[in-house]
Image (cartoon, rainbow, N blue to C red):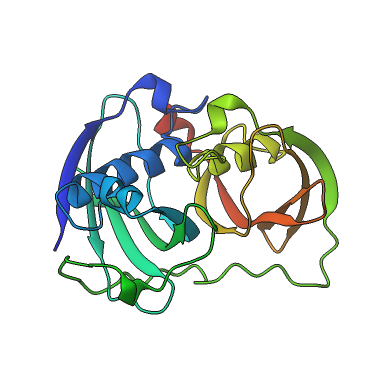
Length: 245
């Protein structure tokens, strides 16, 4: 079962190249999935009543065409067959009927008190599933052990990063990653994969490590206790000057 929702892209959703930022695209998409779930037995509110909540484990996004201020974006989302400890959900974004971006996400449901993952079979899942997307990007985020990632900066988790789970919201990671990429000016993200390994809470210091190999950026953030926070792979493309007009 697919749900559709329309959004108007504004200037504050876009970067210095007048392209829709990945973080804002992900927010639009998750707003659409919240709309689908609002009357479901596994809505966010219903889960909280059960002492549980959603956490994003992994996402892969492919952006085929830049989206600019003033354009109308149609988002669609649907759940896919899920089992074990994970829920798979897909998204498509269209402008004027043309697909501009696709996303595959893998979610978990955790016990709010213990922070342990719950089995999907224990939840009252009541949504009709559709077939998952097939993207060119790898389904799992893997940073080869032979790559030497260098420390490129640090990032403290601040109040505006947080969501109701009291950790950095998953959509904020895309902005954080782009802030450390050395050549974002006149570039745009065409692929990003993020593996969310552990929560980042208010005040925690994240050390950001990065390297570039075969046209891809590999990024890892590590907490003060040495625990990996997230790992990501990013591909960029030079912005066509005419796309900025």
